[in-house]
Image (cartoon, rainbow, N blue to C red; front, side):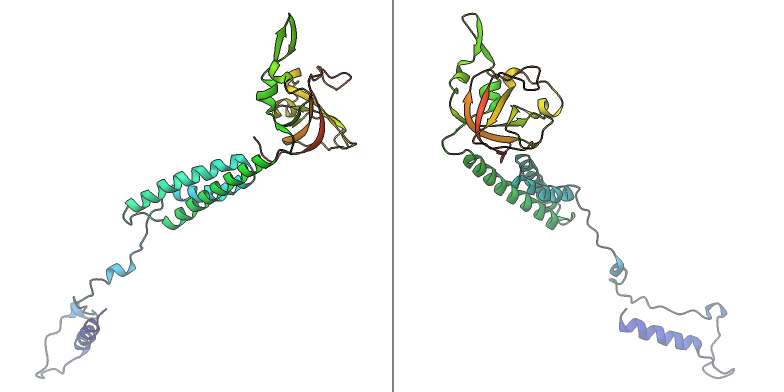
Length: 271
């Protein structure tokens, strides 16, 4: 409130409270209805009423979503699936930032949207590079990468002179050093395994399914090596054989492929 408001108010309040003696020259008729009232000047600063306004700008729902995706995209450094969070966070982040800019100051949350978008892009880029590098270097020297499903299982069998035989493409892998991935079929023994059955996917090993003969492979560890049971995807490298397995395996149907494995480890990539 300006100084003039204060001075006028004090002056008016003083005049209202002063009482003149009866019959004096300064005596004026007094209006009892105005007794106790304080006169307020009309010279009020126009910005006075606006000083208490709350400056609020709505935040688009995409802002917290983009930020959350930016944090989740860090998973892309560990697994391939995590790259999806980075991709979604980057795309939605760009959309959200453009929306805030076009609002001309009507929408807030720009800083948080930028942080989420940048996190998503950084983890998407670094995660993609890491996954690609790991994939390119995970195969041991001297071994050929083979996809269990596409290169072996899906090929099935062929008919040769009226008899069921191995598919020609699979027979080409016989006695070759290969590197492939799969899942360990669960058995009662979980430690110190010298051999185990490898299946093409987690559906047949984790849900009690009976895998088909061409969907599994008997892995025999070489050089006195032993392994422990693992629930996740594993990678094995060794010499492949197109040879039906003889002897008990604990399955209703024995594998028709085997692998003399030189190494077995948890898969570094999921593809």
